[in-house]
Length: 252
Length: 235
Image (cartoon, rainbow over all chains, first blue to last red; front, side, top):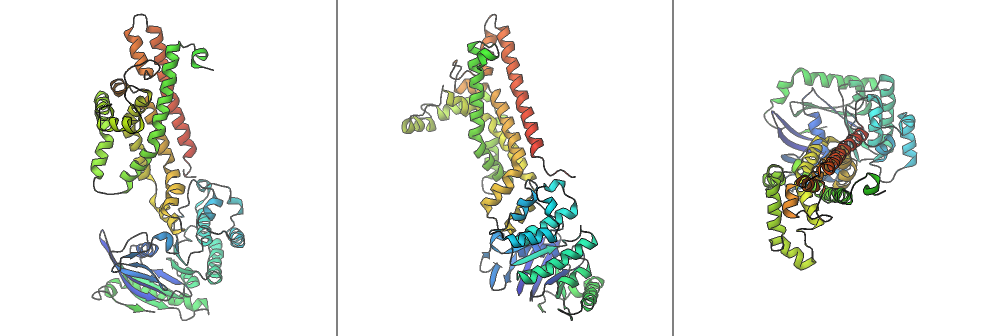
């Protein structure tokens, strides 16, 4: 479960989210560009401080403005993968992969290297990699750190379709095997359907809808439709939902 | 191979060259940690006195070097507020000494060093640091393993500029440390001395050539290092 009561005013934009939602089975985050998805992820990761509110992950308070709790990003147990991989340019791929692995687990390293096809890249520098290769390394790096919650901000945007399928399956498998919760941001309904049993729809900085897939653990086609409908409806009538008169608390 | 036998320099010229290399290198080495910390603070932190610190750091850049030397003399001279403490407590006398040359060179080169470090810190992608934090790295680890290596080209450029400035330092040195052969007489001071002496043209030309050579070597080294560390260029 993650509970987010977040208020953050930025230049010309205000994030105002009040939601508590289970993370089991994966949480998708959708919404039009500029709706606040990345800002919300940054708040959860601790990269952006909230003006007011609190964020509780499971039984752990990550941020509480009233209690003056602001857990440093390094101790939140929250990993993040951005769309533009952000590899450390001065480190080779192997060193990038192992950067966050406090106790490197050979089995996991080997599995990720194989699944993400990183073997030929291990001794190369990020500057010599293609966009897709970089993104695979960034995913491997985040997974090897074994965070409690992994935030994925459109991580497959630079991968080809076949590779994206492989990565999606890997993420779904590791989510269960490593007991790693995931919040997945994407504009691709099919990806969301594969990785998320619940979808949180953001618009203009507010949660306008929470959809629970009717086919959690069941048929993927049904889940796909549910997600597509919720995303479409949110984008089609943003004003109606976001002008609701202040915060709304939505429980999945 | 000594400078004297290897380059056909007179003992006077060789001493000046060796002293210049020694004091300039020491000045850069002593400035390095302070410049990195101050440059990073100015780039990344907002605090009370930020503007004042920035102004103090840049003061030697805009003041005439002789004024800098005089201020050092007032501050670090035997009767100065800091100089008297240094001499009484630790028996250290900076004025008219080789250490004094190092201090003068470090002070005049410091603004250049800090500016380069500051620009490097500002240019470093902070999202990389955030990613490192989210991978569990402490602030110290992030600084040492991500920020500092990425700032390295800027730090090296700053070190090179500070070294070149130290090699050419004249006004602050002659005011604070005087012009004592073998003790405080660096290349520019030796050049000044031979120019004042009748028949010193050949020595002046040699010292001038070495000054140009040193500055050129420093710039070439800086370029080479910068090229080696420029790793994130697009494919």
